[in-house]
Length: 114
Length: 113
Image (cartoon, rainbow over all chains, first blue to last red; front, side, top):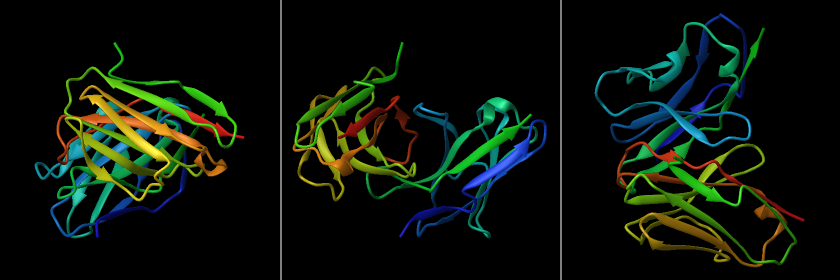
């Protein structure tokens, strides 16, 4: 069965320091993986996606993620956090053989301190 | 121009009532979805339609009935509302039903009293 596990429910960083949000996946197939962000009381916005092209994926707002098959990981990083990055982040796997059904991780809440 | 829109944004109602949530997308996508986000922010798919045809139907009580009058609209009707139905409901759309990016609406916050 395909699934994703976000290893931290809450991450707190200071503004200007690096961000690391961890995600491990489980998939029988070559997975399609996504990171979505949800700001308070808002909908979900796509940050980036991996679909078996380059393993290092660049997204919006300076975020990037690296697909590591040997570690079954897809961690999200950003070199320097900004206050506006404070939000809930979801790692997501798409089920290729089930009509694009998305399976969401539990979410990681990112707090950014001034 | 809003890509995926939902109405209403907020819905407060009594147990036992029937309510509908509407979703429209102007992206020209073929596939639309409904997701439920619970109080712990966990998101789970409920339904998916491709060109007005139901393709994903998760284990959802049959009090929930999606309706797609055309491929740009996917509405969600809920009968006999229960306290446990309180959640945020998100509509989404994508170009196809494969592993492509989905575009989400702003959500409808449903509170059942």
